[in-house]
Image (cartoon, rainbow, N blue to C red; front, side, top):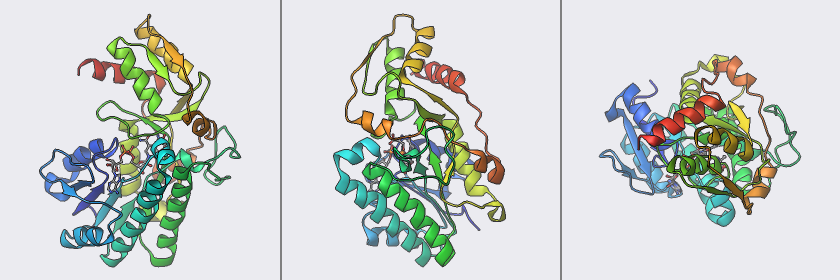
Length: 310
Ligand code: NAD
Ligand code: SER
């Protein structure tokens, strides 16, 4: 049976730090193994560098892992600062996880993907799953490869690999890990602190986004979906709403009338310009009944409420 022993790689990151408590509450603390290369304050923590094949094997085998949420990754902006590391973690790390999963008969491997798989030639609005995926970032290139490799292991070896393309994720519990969509979280935090914000994207850079509770719901729904209902495997589009930095600034001014933003685009502008504005998430709805709960207004309101209490 799946979910008896769940390994989470990259568990100290933006998603992992919220997914681990959720998995623990659903399946029981003793069934979840949070791992990362950075230490997490959790008695169950295991150090695991996913680029180290032997350690990956040993940990999975020794703990009789049957389910993996593979979150270890280098995101878009950090990837441009260190393409070599991004390749090693995002490609070789995944390869190690897939091979070890086969060897140890792991039942389910979840691999989040991203809007980073798209590129400047992709249509901008309501982008379908099957479209042009010619990214310009090392992050996107590694993630296209990850989707395809996951699908290959499913087709060729029958390994149950599933993945979904997240948009930018908004959350307040843990800081984001070096992405291009991080600006939105930074802007909200600054507004709540009563400070102004210098934004690294232009006012009109529209991007698709989602609130963390919906992102967690999505990955859990896909993990628990009946196999027979899945026509896609590793590349489901999911998203909730889209906005520009200027729209977020103006929404925040409804709460903080004196809040202002300066716009100073840097290298991340090129990344944002290469990504779509909105996604067609209908396959996620059709194949595993996913629809997000939080819209833009509710997300900003909830984030402000929670950040104020910190
Ligand atoms: P994050 O950067 O916050 O966390 C990634 C974690 O991986 C970090 O804790 C880091 O220490 C760890 N890590 C790095 N190198 C490692 C290695 N060699 N071995 C083990 N761990 C290592 O990222 P996240 O936002 O939690 O993203 C998780 C997954 O979701 C990634 O695959 C990412 O591409 C995807 N995703 C995230 C977003 C988002 O907005 N957060 C959007 C789309 C897709
Ligand atoms: N939020 C992520 C990033 O900006 C998208 O995958 O890198």
